Length: 152
Image (cartoon, rainbow, N blue to C red; front, side, top):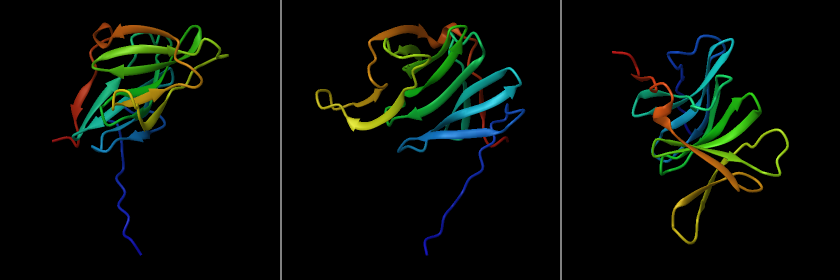
């Protein structure tokens, strides 16, 4: 019988319901979410033993959730504003909104491991389309919280 190894994840800022991991890439970088307070949920990236808070600058309702990361380090998830949930792609420090123009209520992107044939790069998709997008630099938000993990 194979031996399984489990690692407990506890984002240091998780105050209420814990830390939830939703995606991992080949390098072992993990994305997910944690609830900081009753009104604030943030995404996180755990890479190289360091937690980084992910908070889309357009998330006026203080909710950002990360669901997937590809081998290029691109992260997808959702954020919430006064109009509902929106998908996002975080790539190279830039948040890009992904809204399906035919969607009702919200768009939830997910990671695709299928290489894009024309470019050889991994593509990230939202079903059924990604026709509408807004690009926002990550720096527009408060600086991400990066702390070493485990603590010294």
